[in-house]
Length: 132
Length: 182
Image (cartoon, rainbow over all chains, first blue to last red; front, side, top):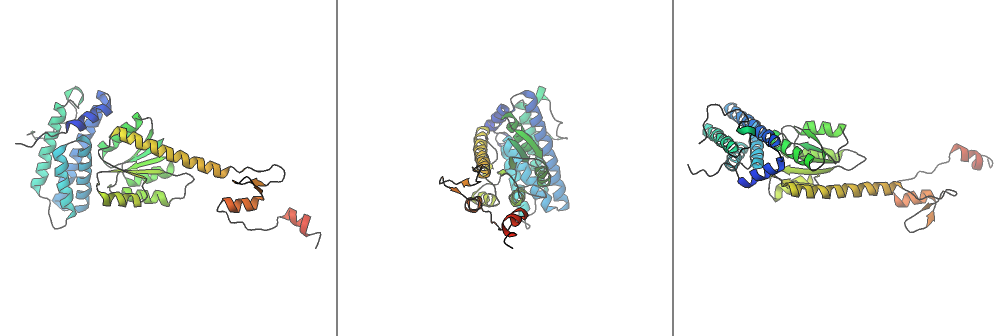
């Protein structure tokens, strides 16, 4: 697909270094995943019922979390939603939301490959979505 | 230091809290600006690290509230945000922040900037203590000023502080000095 790596290796290395042990790393990784899933759900919900304020804050917060994890493309996608939500005349499309969800699946898969979850397990699977 | 962390993103808040604890600080965490304000008012916090964009009360308004509040001690405020660029930096600093860091933070840089914060906070505490420490003669009650002259306490206070004195006569002095002549 030519999307490039889902995670920035330098940021992940820094996260691993900061965590210091497997349990802390797992706790951080699980928190990212559940927070990112929650925020994508808020974004989807806001788009479906037209709540601009929720949309902006959720997209901005997802961008911040993605920056801290080094989720390269997720940063760009959430930034796109954030910028569009500030412009009343441009609607965030369902395709953009689906792209966000697909990318989050790819990020989760990369997190598992990087061994960020204790025992290779960790948080629940993305429902019905396969990483690309 | 006791540090209040405000961020609506669970991951970023946890990441920052763990880093600060690793650096030896006590951390109080808040999920948004309103919770941060409540915890700030009920606890003795040395430093606040706040995200900018949060639902309800955002980081800038939190910063303005902290600066408006009358307090015996100064609170150092750092904005930690993904908001980049000169315009955002100026807006954040003008709201009363002491420092502005963009995400993702680097642990070593954060530790260094916290060391600066600690230095500034300790200097302010020293200034406050010096201001409260007045060398005074135990007999005549004159105070020694910074030019090494001894002067009347009322004159000293007016020169060295922003205090405005309103002269009157206490009941004891009235009986001793004023009444006999009347």
